[in-house]
Length: 601
Image (cartoon, rainbow, N blue to C red; front, side, top):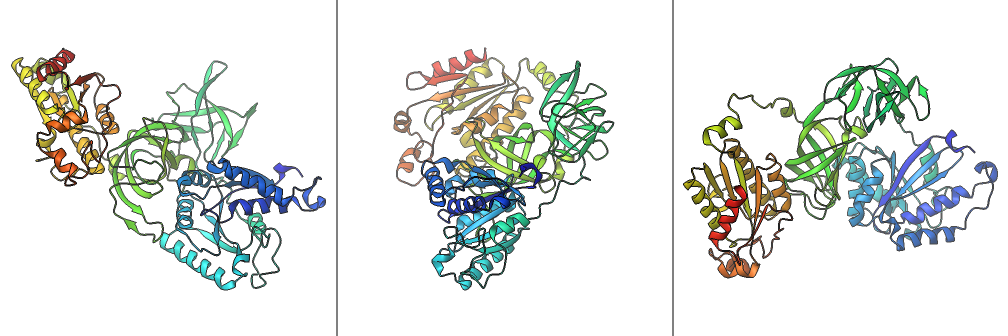
């Protein structure tokens, strides 16, 4: 048997812990390998099932299945790649990895336990990542005496769940026993009331829509190359067909050119289709970078910098509005800020619940603002250009994964208004450039006192200043915000935007805020040009700050009357590379102020 002669099906097995995924895969591999030589098309003794199962259990014990375990096998009708996804809730991210490239999902249910929260969560993730066919494998039927009633009750509950999720999934349910092999490869003699296909037959017969030949051409650029001293563009075709002579458009730039040569892996070819890795030569030099998308010139991909998306959150730290991450979409990496968390999905009821944050393994509808436009398509139309991952900008760990539903219409209606008076003109009449001096530290560290002293000295010098103090701002601009993590993020976002406008006006702005989270301080820094933002860490040991307690806040926090208080029951993340580090346990207010003035000079 020649493997490449048969169509390929990628599928995942998922479900809750101990539903029997590894046992089922072991049985499937064993029994398909136990076909006759004529059926198999090769020779060689099949492995012993017990030994194969022991091997799979050893992998699980050793932690190998923390990552997705991919396995290949084949029958005379089809080739398969199966992703064995761990059922543990803490490894939901690995299940999502498998779902993102799957054509079909086998969702396992232990017949004794029925539908569990992880079963329902995995189903929601499968639907979110575009899998449209599900096989509901009701396993361990031998443990419920092959009961038809148990099977039908589970199937009815699953059908109701899909209806609540509004999931556009087609599914068929199969009662089976992975351990005994019933209805896995061979039909069961124990369940004569079931007349449907075995699991293997369902997999072999699964219809997977081929790539559309009429889809418009799309190719994210991976890198540039030179052939015969001519610049060429390398990538994998995400949709459509490309031929020599076709006209293409570069998005988001909007420039156009004609294809003069199409190269495959080792030779020039006339055309290429979705999934092919190609090198394209154009009839003119264009400004094309990694992450740009080459498109059909007549049907270009849209571009936007604001999106409505669905996100599966994978990080231990919650997703909060106002926080920024690196979004990797196609081959482009951009900075993305969560502007609005519309709601989160209750995976059990299917309800959309109001939320101020997303915790690990939760799914939510989110709106994002990007620092630059990107070419995209809705995930339902193109997985490559509609799917993305979110990367923590400090740890570089994958924090979430999501799909684009649509661009926000307002993104196309917002433009920077050209003004005759710019920041340079404003700076000239003031006699100095605008700056932002951001003082961060614990309550009681001395931030406001030092900032006040600095502003007084600058005022004597004729410098135009303004002091944004945390308490003062909460009397007006931020009076609607509390002290939860989400409110703290929004508090800093608003203040940073105000400070940016003041610097644009030519002022030296002193910002005195606890600002406990590095991510928000980094977000603030990125609003300014290089050299405009000066972070000053007002460092004081907690014991010293608490002994000062000028407002009596620590005493209230210790008494449990002031929740979410930084340093007590909410963390403070000190700056890693501030422009200035002050130790107010040793330095006086005057010495600290002088250090800031020296930094400005």
